[in-house]
Length: 113
Length: 446
Image (cartoon, rainbow over all chains, first blue to last red; front, side):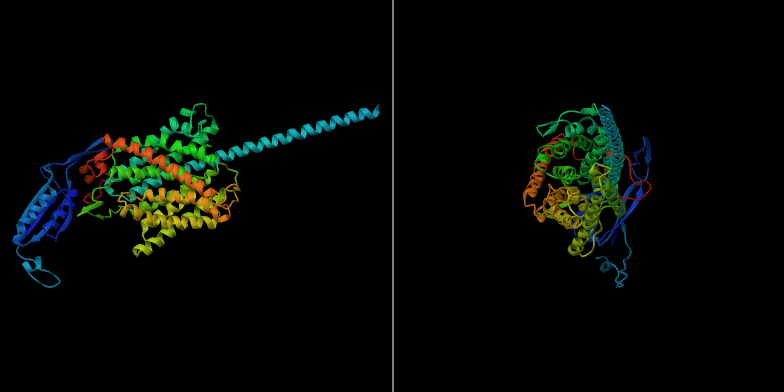
């Protein structure tokens, strides 16, 4: 089992969700986050004065999957979030010890699906 | 001889008496006229200020019913359609609308308000806020995807050309007025003109990304919820407030006792509109829908605007009620059948209900305030109804044609729609380089 964490552009969330749906990955957690990577921020202006915006708005996606879904999930996130420009985001894949479904007490792979 | 002198003297005194009483009466009349003019001046400038506040109403309604990432762009559009539009109406619009008529089709003098006096200034002030109302209706229907430059060009054209010319036909003794077409405060002149432009604009522009998804030849309609319902409600209350200037001010006289009649019919129609839309949405969707009920109040107001002076209170109630139901059906039809994306329902409120209200004059006019206008339900036959239909049709064709050319040209020049990426990120950042809610964690991920 793996936990896939991805940071993407907020406005790409919809197309990522669409791609995941196509890949039959229906379970997802989404949170809004602020962060900074290679993109380093951008400039806004307020009443003619430039403002450096360092922490960019990003959207964080978490998906726990069984081994055979790892690659399809990664492919789907890339397909939905890729524009080729700096700021498209990153995907982290972590090993996952166990999963427990609170309602039934199921554990492991059975609790993921 | 004594007698004749006496007679003569008597004749002189009588004459003196007559002349002196005449001049006293003359002075009275003059004095009354001065008061009347003063009342007119105060009432029209006050009413103009009330109608101006409707700009704030439109801005709040549109911002509330759209997403946070575009709110600043909507404020900018509402600010600029008035600012650019009022300059255009001063330079050209007023002259085409209220200048000396050429064949009842178009005005020909008073460009840049040349030769104007206090009375003309007063009338211009009252009219410019109406022109701005017509212009600003379009902003909502084209929200969240229109290029700012294209929008400014559109604002100038509608205020300088499209609105004044059809307005001349109806409000300055043009060919429709001659045939007896009645539109008291502008269901057609103002609201339909704005709404038909909005319809063409929204159609040429295309829907917002993600609004209509095509899959296997079938279109699924998605909702894109507005970000602030209290703001939308505030906007509707402001519009309702301003409407008392819009309708009651259109008596054009501060001493006219029918001002109150107009205010009463306006109030009843707005209330009935809200009730009608609430009932229709409750019956149709299972819950009384807030945004539809808000649209319903506006629909009632638009509906009564044409007939407010010639219909009685029960008539206004029915007009409002029908408007309220109609607006719900029209929103559904435009969204789910025509697939034209109108985020705030501007075409349904101002176009469909504007046409209905104009038509309703031919049904509900009771012939009391104006014996010359009697509707079908009060024994007037179908004469007025047919003239109302002619007016609705003529203005519809005029606006579809001119707005079609305008938006077609803007589109072909690439000035109409923002890029897909900008639409996704929001027009606040894309068009103006700023955010509306800086410091709040609002994300443009929907």
